[in-house]
Every structure is written in C-alpha cells, then in structure tokens.
Image (tube, rainbow, N blue to C red; front, side, top):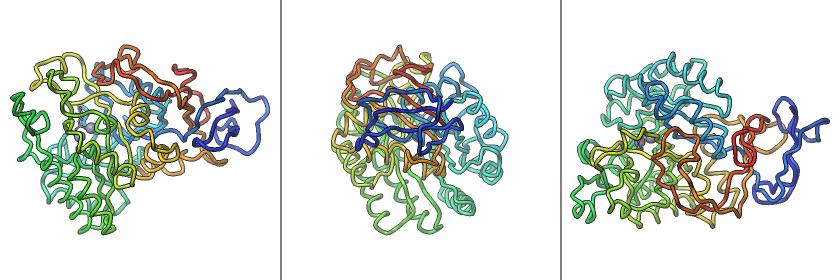
Length: 422
Ligand SMILES: NC(=O)N[C@@H](CC(=O)O)C(=O)O
Ligand SMILES: [Zn+2]
Ligand SMILES: [Zn+2]
C-alpha cells in the first residue's frame, strides 16, 4: 500500500510531504491511490536504530520475546534493533543467529539484527563461530559478550583480528572482573559505603576502555564501547579519537538522566550494569554526546521478570527496560540537541556502526521508507503497565518526559499509528 505522509517538519526543519510507493521506498511524487498519514505539527526523523537491545528469546520468553521486544521498539520509534547474544542458548553459532533473524522477520515490525557472541557460551575463552555467523543469512557484523566483559586481552586481540577481515566490530561490556567482581552492584563511592552495598568503581570500566582502544590501534580493527558510564571513559575516548583510532561508543538514556542517589531507597528497579553514576559523570556523558566523542544513544533495554527483579538489592537482576522511552529521555536530558543531531545519534550513526547503511536512514527518494513522526511539544507521564514489553522493570514509571512518538513507519508499512500498535 502506498502512503503519503503530510505536513511533517523534516528533521525539524522545512515542512514537506513524504511519498512512499507500494514497495516501501521513498519516491519523488505522490503515488496514486495512496493512504494518507496526517503528520501536521510533527517532526519526521529516519527510523531509530538501537545498537543494544536484550530480547530474551530463546530461553526467557517470560521476560521478552522477539515479537514483544519488536512491538516495544516500534512504539519507541525504532525500525531496527540489534539483539544481544546473552540468550539461552547463547547466540554463538550461525544457526542460532539465523533463528533470531528469522523470528525478527516473522514479527515483521522492525529489522531484528542478531549480535553474535565473541566467545563460545560467553565463556570468555574460545572464540565463537564469528566467520560463519557473518556469512550466514543473518549477516552478523556486531559481536559482543555483553553482560560479560571479554576480559582476557589475548582473546580480545584475536577477536579484533578476526572480525577485521570482514569489517566487523566488537562491542565491549567494559567491566574489569577483578576491580568490579560479581557482587559489585552500585557505583563505588561515599553512598555505597553508607548503604553497605558492594561498589563497582568507575576505574573498572576505564581500564578496559583504555586497554581496548590500544588493542584497536594495534590491530587496526574496530572497537565499540557499550554503555559508557564515566567521565574517565569519556576522557580516554576523546584521546583515542584524536589519535584517529577506530573506536565508537554509545551511552544509554538512563546514564544521561539518572544518578546514583536514586539508590537510597534500595529499589532494585535502579540496579543496572554499569551502575548509575554521580552527576559529574552524567554531565560529562551529555557533553560527550553533544560533541561527538560518544557516537550514539543505545537503550540497553534489559527486561527482567518480576521474580528475578523483586529481591533484596544485592540479589536482584541487573537491568532496566528502555525501548519505549528512549527518545523522550534524550529530549528531556538534552533539550538543546537539534532534531538532526537526534537523528544522527539515534539513527544514522548507529546504523553505520552496525553496517546497516542504505537500509533506511534517510528521508530521501530511493531510500526504504523508515520514519518516525514525533510530537515535539507533548509531555508524557510514563506508565509501566501500558508497555508492550513483557517486563515491568521500568525506571521511568510516573515520570514526565518531553516529546511523544505518534507514528512509526517500517519499509512503508505503518507499525504505530497515533501512539498505538497499528
Ligand atoms: N545492563 C544490564 O544491567 N543488564 C543486561 C546485561 C548488560 O547489558 O550488561 C542484561 O542482559 O540484563
Ligand atoms: Zn553490558
Ligand atoms: Zn546490555
């Protein structure tokens, strides 16, 4: 079905109509017999791309499935998501990656691109089938042991050398296990001492970021730093980019707005890896996103079932959901960011990092019609119970966020209309 999207402000600038033919591509002229989607007063951005989503299928379909995660993504304005490999079983074979890719196609709401594990079973020792996963139908280009750090420098070096051959990238969960061990559950500082919670110091992240940019320089391969959380990591990244080292980095919405003092009530909703940090770190992350030191915003959407999350703080699972709220959080945390900068950090650059270029990160004729239409002035109070996600570990519940996703279009098909699944 062809489509005419009328009256949107394109990237927050000039107002115009967008035309989509029945193959789902943007075209120059209005196709005849097209459906009309009213976007008067809305801002049109290319469909958002999330470099870091946890779907829990296979293994924990009680917390999220590829379908429910895809629904949450569409509601958040996404048209592509990268599904992390820490499922059960782990996505460490071509067969497992192809299965996730197929489930994404069946759901049909966003492009679901599997991330392949770096090591077999996320064990940190033996490389997974990196080449086979890349050559599979899923065409995996991003590899990550996320949830765990590839802490052995020799393994990380070999992974970087291996993926270089086909232009892949390793996305690292930077957490030195000796400095932030398995018990570490909140930012190490004055507050963790007062609360009696085992601390996870910023340096545990920074030493791995520093090591990995040097391994990136040594191998000439591509390193991506997942969920950067400290000012020290930003300093390392700034230095590395000044040396033209091929490193990219992402920040989560929650690390741009929430701080460690939320933990005073011991509410496990706020327990996440890496932990929420003090305001100085939040300020440094915002500045780094503005100036391009951090390339992208990625949700790290990490759904967990109630019985894994509702425990004493030290025992609860790490992670929070984020797909449906990310745009609102970014607008709230950085109201000065232009819409074209929002498109850069939430769509164009993440697509480039993931090797998804040409798959719909432009509003120009000839591009697949992936577009999100946003009400820039709306303010929304988040209600975790209206979420499409199967999980309720939502740190934004009850908060007001700026802007609202009104419609999402994925390859010419309306997936979200008036804020609801179409
Ligand atoms: N972010 C989290 O706190 N949890 C993630 C794993 C991860 O991103 O490290 C998860 O899979 O639940
Ligand atoms: Zn992680
Ligand atoms: Zn993650």
